[in-house]
Length: 283
Image (cartoon, rainbow, N blue to C red; front, top):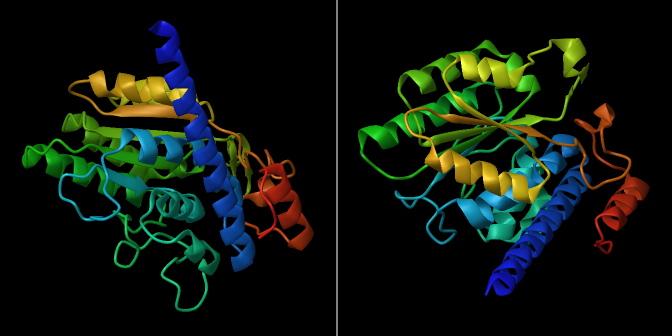
């Protein structure tokens, strides 16, 4: 029996890894066809997005506004290509639509829009506002005695915003144990290394000081993501911050740890290399 359980566990990991790969392909396809966008940070959070939407969260693509659903807020809204690719992979809208990113008359804007895109729970883009909205959702769940959970992904550079720490104080004060925030710690932001631009580290000590439960992981490791989320479910009386070390541009050789790919689209030859790196045939 233990051998069978291990085999099933391995099968689940393999399936999630494949989903994360497909999400990364969707990111490259959308940004390339748009001719603009933010591929670096999007690629870095693909593993987190795959685990949340295909294993952790209670959602229904056929009923995106289901009141009992878990909520997700992409506080770092500029990495919308990751959210769109995930939603399409999960069946909220056709994958073919990804290539319309940022184009006239497309509902896939440069930042998530709750009004038009199925599966988007909050319009985001102004850094710091997303985690604040997530706190409001979590508090609403507490007040209404609902059992949904709220998940958010923040950028490490985003934590330079004072509003993030106001939200952190709020979440701890109201004991929002139904809130989990991933801090995407790739060490890079648009102007360079975060340690040089405006160093917000150490994140773990800061969130602990604000009254959060803190877990540190490799955010590109599905096993560690799974363990962290399982631990977060056991926490009572306080929100959980998961400090997730990721590789910006993960999966595409020339984009990994390269700050210039924070907000730039690949040209044709670079696009072909990216698809090859991800094991995909050219569309």
